Image (cartoon, rainbow, N blue to C red; front, side, top):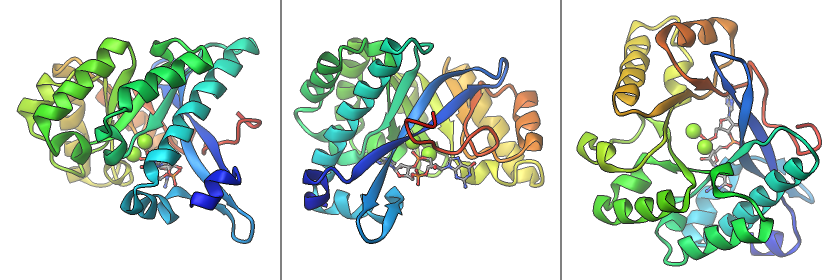
Length: 240
Ligand code: C2E
Ligand code: MG
Ligand code: MG
């Protein structure tokens, strides 16, 4: 991984997030890929867990942040409709002391306004030490970046903390979306998460939408945005 970073073997792919009501794309999620010289294009599940274990995720994560901001700014300069870019932060990165400096310098060096950056954090990352998390989230929020909770529903969130954190969005994990049109339980969970999010004044986005039926169902439940193969898989910068 260390060598891959130095040899510039990582790249970012981008998956659009779509507004349910208007079918417009106003943001994309950056997803890392490793273009391995022998094994070809590798998905993050194959190397991110190890990167977290060894700690090198902090360096990889900084590269992702910088690269994501750079792309977002490039698209603006190329005359594309301004799009927000969402970056996944690992728990370790979220807790690193220099996080604020790194985020600020990534924005500054790319000349990107903070409202065009969104950070995705998992429930376990923010619930691990809620007091400390609240402090970090406040700082990030004051900076003007957006914050979402990724894979919502798979970890366990304390609702009292959830309501105190300065969050913008909940992302419903794709495991609940997969059978949402067939399983009464999954439908209930999705309905409940949407209503929870809305009552906390948060936007809600569904991950892993693969069919028109799923999308229609989510539309009826009042889901704000979706992401998934139905609209588009993650794309290279060129394809995007
Ligand atoms: P995630 O943030 O929840 O990203 C969503 C994953 O779902 C992506 O997998 C995406 O390709 C996949 N996906 C999107 N739409 C669909 C769909 O309709 N059906 C199905 N079956 N899958 C869909 P990917 O790119 O393999 O990323 C996996 C995970 O790796 C991400 O989950 C995220 O937790 C982590 N990850 C990706 N990039 C980074 C990064 O730069 N830093 C860190 N720390 N983690 C990353
Ligand atoms: Mg994510
Ligand atoms: Mg997710």
